[in-house]
Length: 361
Ligand SMILES: *Cc1c(COP(=O)(O)O)cnc(C)c1O
Image (tube, rainbow, N blue to C red):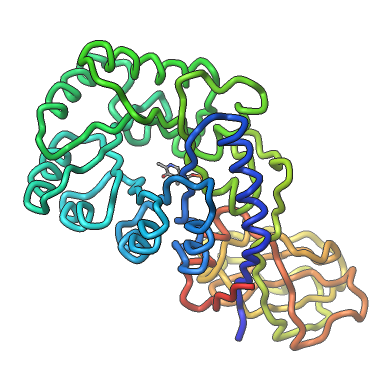
């Protein structure tokens, strides 16, 4: 059945080898691999868990972690919850999550009492916001950070495992030597003031990996969390390709349900499309147009690229995508399949859509 997402586990293993070499061997960082881009699919997690260089397996959803915690722990990998937890999920967190990211004292207090009930000490990573303005204690308010640490280290069932930052997500701020050095500095001051040592200073996601080969990852950053760079081979700071990775480990395959020559300009008064937007059309004369049976319910049109370079995506609606096939001559017929590589948004929707079949090769 189509549409289908084809996941090439050998290629992903190659990407994992490549980012592991950069991060661990050249960057002296521990390696946290992030599975949320592919909904923590079982076969993917098994491959990651079997990789000797992976230290942590992380996801943003407790539900995904609950599914893979046994597999991960069996292979000696710690499970990590990236999204700061909801109050309503703390009991699930203490069950399945070895390391949990946090930025709110009320939640940490709840975790403390839940961990007590469960009979464990919960490791937490304190998120510091260096200006991207998503989660974290704001870096300029050091008094607040120190007050929080003072309270956390008094908790019997919470262990402050380290601190971390997330960048290039909401505010698109690029990690650099100077902002990451501020994180290292905050860590040092916490260690001095409270006479403790932090296991982890986590320097960000796939937008931080480029710093290693530039020699600009500050000393003291000892962990990176990688999702997109491993799944798609992207350095997400400057949108370059990472060495020895491929961008076609994930392929979306869809079937042609109509193939006809039609004009490129719609006929009649132009209103708004199915999504309330006013479309723009370019007159290219008579075109060969294909409809494939996949749409905005399944994917993100701006985040997929036809593998056949002669094909162009014209647009689409919930269940249809229209392709310009003019350059392909007589190579395609109704019933034929068209392949696409995916960007991050496309991958996320494809992985999440129940209408897209998943195949692991
Ligand atoms: C999603 C996420 C990551 C991984 O991001 P990539 O850009 O896919 O590497 C890392 N850390 C946090 C907190 C995240 O939410």
